[in-house]
Length: 354
Image (tube, rainbow, N blue to C red; front, side, top):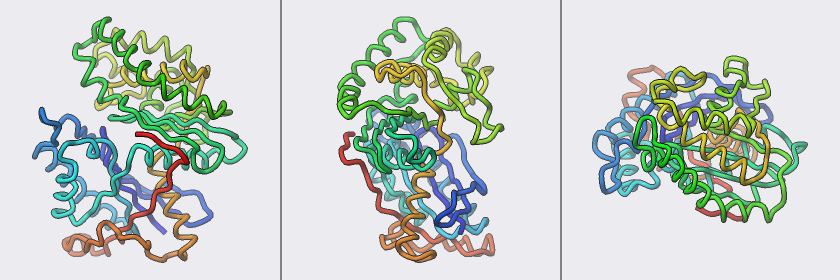
């Protein structure tokens, strides 16, 4: 069956369609995305303004039609810290539902971390042993550790690359003082979290799962995405420290010439590098592997597990996207049935923190 997952993140909004069935790995069929930094639409009170809401609604409608046109059978739609932490987040979700009939499933930071870890475990398998997963988003930084499919501990801290860039790095290039102060803040924030993780034992594998980690690995010499998902990609702490220093002296325009750095992420790649550098140093690991699966894949795999228990094509037992009726114009415009709207229960770690 063809499944869709709609991810409303802090930096991009992304629809991924995969062909999958229980017992098989999901294979990407198509994707539709655009850069959309919702944090750039925040007003002084932390509200997402009308322009940002309009952009979001337009994309949700585009994504729904894209999924229907490509015959997706159901669609998971979720949002993370960008809307979760907005002052008017509840109102934004209500408006999206009213104007699109799509209910975005709001994930907590712990749920994000747990579902990403779930995908990482499925990718590496049981033979990997204890895994520490790190994921730097736009608004938050998720960490999870465990030996099973779900982590023993999942934590989210406000160290997203976009957030830190907005709050700390105001000059282009940033001043040495601002970089030094940001390094200090990152370490201060991570210190109690790292201490809690270390009480659980040491990981056999550290995995990085975000676009930030993929970009940093590419800058440091890892294979490009075109080489495929099965090429081993690593990010070494020594290379990371060197490149963090170099990037701190570069303008945003100069960073665009680095491999793997897009227009949307050039401004925030330094903040991401500083978080990654601090994490590897404080967890005391010399390197990490870059995992091709992350949150979207975790949610898809969770949906497949649900289908195994409920029957291959059984509808989800929970209210799908608020039980909404699909947008009427889909059938008229595409000649195809709209995807069934579903939501899934999100299992989380044994312990979690936001």
